[in-house]
Image 1: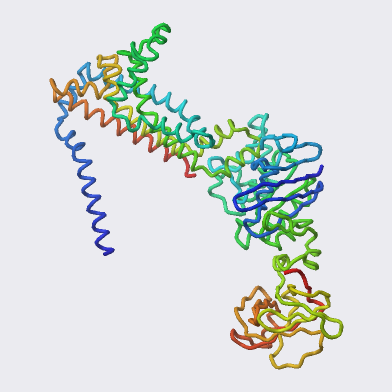
Image 2: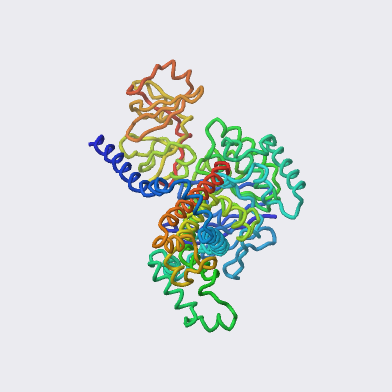
Length: 261
Length: 355
């Protein structure tokens, strides 16, 4: 019996690996080096790639700066309605991207809840790069919040208490003990959120549109190219995969470069 | 300045209700089994636990007074709290751990002070080591240096030796005793080990079920324990039974499970007869009884453990009797487990206390 289960585990692993790796491998097989170079000459592809890196970086910065204290608060405080707050914050995880886009339009669009207020403040989001950032923050932040909250909850409470008895207030304890000790987990959460933002498609398309150089991120450019220029779309996909893998690998290395805790 | 603590609060199934006072320069050891509420007292003093009712005063400073709605945050209380597992910050080197509480100084000044503190505890050479690489004894010294770094008004030590292996513990205990002896502030120490409490505390408060059962010096507690529980905790053999007046003005105790012992203490009814293991000698099971003032329980030899030049063994005689004899005495008798033997001790070494 025991042997059988071991064989089953190995078999399942092999199937999962083959299934998940095959499409990615196929991308690289289908694109020759020539096509890859050609596609990098294509202005629309380059614009889309640059825009993707720019908006995901901005969105990630917003998520981390605002989300880290939020996660800390949720991890360290017990209050009435906490379960509701956590559920609301995690809701974008389960929303279909198209629904997220519609919801953003209903809130921040010209005819939305805050449309007039934003308009009179001179803020334009729809068909603007800022709109893409809004969409990315909306769909990607729960990934970071969840992970960061779990990371803070997993901290040894004695470390935080020691910091307090050593004269540090809550803010200093958060900055000098909680964040550094939880850093590897926070980094993993940021990587998850960044991956989700980089692949974002539906909400961006509906809320911000697909204007080359303004709101057309790499996934949108791939979708736009797929009907007219399959080879180009394929090449851009390969580049996107390579960039994603490079960034994830970089994060891994940064996390590992920190001495073992 | 002295420390005065009163705390009453419900903690799960435990009803904590403790009042203790510690004069400046003295160390009170809170000793008792785990789950007795000892650590909760430290947490109330440090501000890590807010009791339903309570008062904490350190010198003229009031840190907590639930009646007058006074509450000071833990970072404003100046407690030196040594945590059970030391709670060293894993992302900082040893000297940065020690420098953590030092504020308002330049980096150079902080490092110099931290090095001086590490030097005081004999671990200056580990200043740049990551704390994850340190041994238990080294961690304890770094943690102590950090605990005293900002000249606390109170020292709180939670099981300071329990994270150490047996070999390190003896040396660390002697060092800690020297530190506590040199401290001018009141200290509260928590331990589940009576010997540790006796070594480190000027006084011992026995805590169980959230209450202080008895407080006194180690020798007072050992000489006149208030109950069988406390006698047992101080390391005595505790035999339960029913006491009645006996021959020669002694009290005879009919033991549960058979046998009788006599004591010079006068009591009647349900009692715990207590005697220290080193007051008991072993004799052949059929030897003459020396007199009526001699106790004698015959049983079989149970487990035997050698501790240095001593031997600890239990005699199963209705109730187990722990006996501690010299290894030399054991050699002359040539005991093995299962032998029949008599445990013998004086009536005057037998204390009768509440069960």
